[in-house]
Image 1 (cartoon, helix red, strand yellow):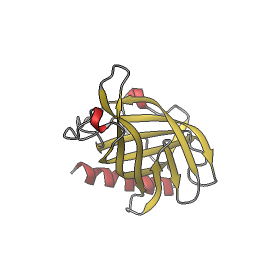
Image 2: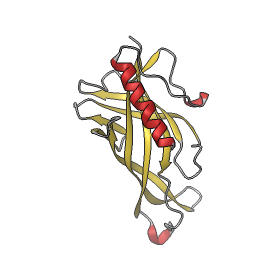
Image 3: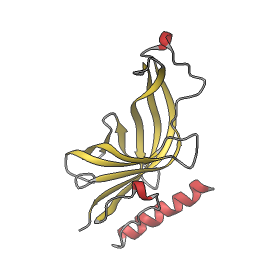
Image 4: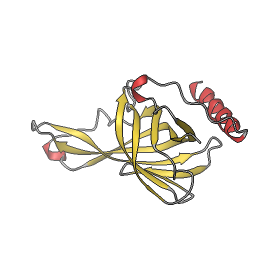
Amino acid sequence: MISRYLSIALLLGIALHASGQGIARPEVPAEIKAPAGEEVVLVAHATGSQIYTCQAAADGKYAWTLKAPDAELHDAKGAVIGKHYAGPTWKSNDGSEVKGKAAAHVDSPDKDAIPWLLVNVTDHSGQGALSRVTSIQRIQTKGGRPSSSAECDASKQNSETKSSYTADYYFFAPAK
């Protein structure tokens, strides 16, 4: 039911953008709000995996450590419009690309999902939909945590596991 409402909200946001009224900012906790003076320029739904590697921590205990995401980005109609992968990097099919660094996070309302994030863009390349983007929000996450049944110990060091996830990404740029 929530995904139905989210789909309606995404379609409404695209319709508003097309009419020149802009895409509404999502309601999020204060810690991950995009900076004032920025507007939503693109919304994408991601489907894919979070890839983890079994590593020893400083205390000698082994744990799954995030290696990289591997996801497709979809528009409100479900068409693939880009990719999300290591860096973290978001690449649009139009050739524009951004890399970023997490600036803040909050736990997902879904305890089994990866956190919601605010990402500051650190690098741009290409011209297109992402060329003006300065921050990104990851919200509405589902899944993405390493499976509790996937063992991580010395015998599994450097092994990988993938965990399926979905999320919505809101891309922000300075308001025109």
